[in-house]
Image (cartoon, rainbow, N blue to C red; front, side, top):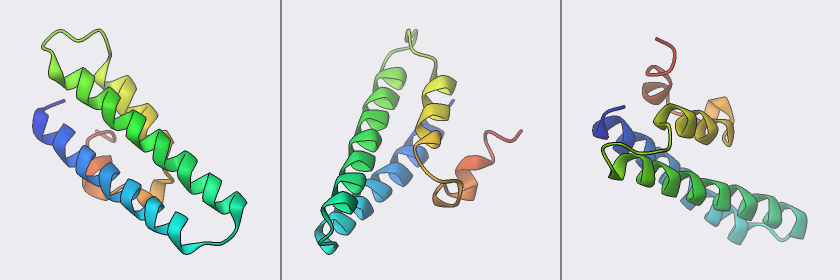
Length: 89
């Protein structure tokens, strides 16, 4: 995975994290708030794993494994098409 792909994925995930934060503020249902916060935490964890995997030339972590786990946290319609094309080759 190139650094440009990692940056594009990171920006998409960051956008989703911010959207989940807005949804937390916009709902009064405690259960929904917890669901959105849980998704935020998963997104932040995925960003950190992506950062670790791209920070070192010979990372222990597999970039492909991290990205596939990252994409599983989001519904397929939430993942931009330009990101998905890298995994459908």
